[in-house]
Image (cartoon, rainbow, N blue to C red):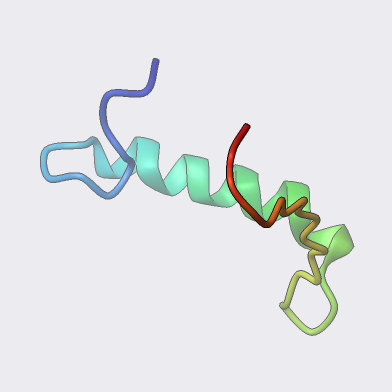
Length: 50
């Protein structure tokens, strides 16, 4: 379970920077001009619940 975000006060700045680099490296091949294009899919049910 994650109990602290990498930008939380007191989080090791070296670990946060390493995490940022790892994520950037992992997603860079999928980015165009530094932007990730992500599709969002959702299902909506209108009306009263059963």
